[in-house]
Length: 125
Image (cartoon, rainbow, N blue to C red):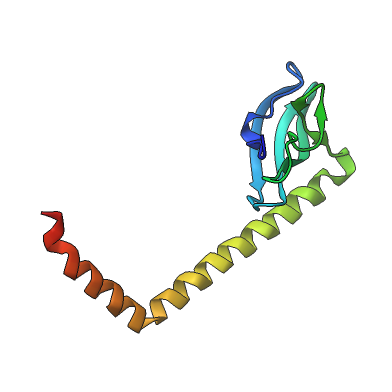
């Protein structure tokens, strides 16, 4: 199992409730995630985990008894981790917007795409 979807990491049973993945790097070889959850009696816990990679056969890290688990961030660091994740998300959004702006500015590529679509309209009928 090369990649463990962080949404499915609910071990140990009875400790993880109300899991909300707030960041998943979705990187092919180095996927990691941050989540908020109710952990045991802490309703505001923040967890981290490495989700695995295609080259590995593990279930990421941490894990216990063969089940994927979360590393619970110490309370003093939780806000800093969540703030860092917000900055990463903002950068990702800016990168996507920049990409759309570049595509919109590519009038030659837009014309080629339009011409290709128009040339295939009759084939769909």
